[in-house]
Length: 299
Image (cartoon, rainbow, N blue to C red; front, side, top):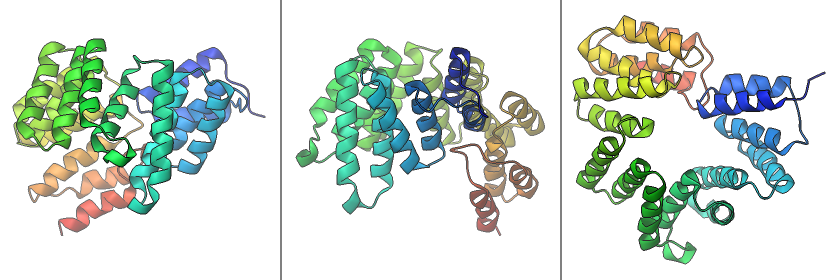
């Protein structure tokens, strides 16, 4: 018989989820059940969303919000779920989940106008949505400014997102650089800077920003994937992959980051792909089929 979660267990699951360690979060939730507790339902819904089990994510998320309707975090999560459903649906099926997403974002905003992540997705909604669904580009800019008042670096990243949606590459780069300069210890700013530089092959700078991100959150996989890709070009691949395996043992995706760079150079990526196939993928990481396709594209 499964045990109920204690407060410490809830905190552990939440920390695992925030760090992208979904397999471990799922195992802990399944071993200690509390299906009448709003926080357990919310965490279980987050796990379901991570693993793309969207029907269950909706049901659990709605139960959590109904049990504790004053939690902005639960409303924000519902917006994430419905937004994901809308994004993945054919265009003729997007209206319903799109409206439910907007309703949940508005509810979260009413409960907590300073919830930065909710402001961020609400901003994107106003930027992307057509006018008849409430799209308002001026409101999107206003929300980016609101984010900047709460978290200046995140505000610059919000402006970078708006620039990307407007296909303004120069404005996007300017905003990301401002984010890093505003707060060099901002994890997302460092990641976005590294990803931008990776696109132009500026590997020495990619390594600088990825190392900074890894120092901020050593247990997050994203910096280690960037460092593995960088090591293909600058050397030290074995060391980079060893460090990644120690820091994030439950997510082998840095192997594929390196494999992709090797394959692009016409080098043998098969050993790294086979190592990836030996482990169950983390939620959100490439599937085994995706990994096999990496080899097929380079035959």
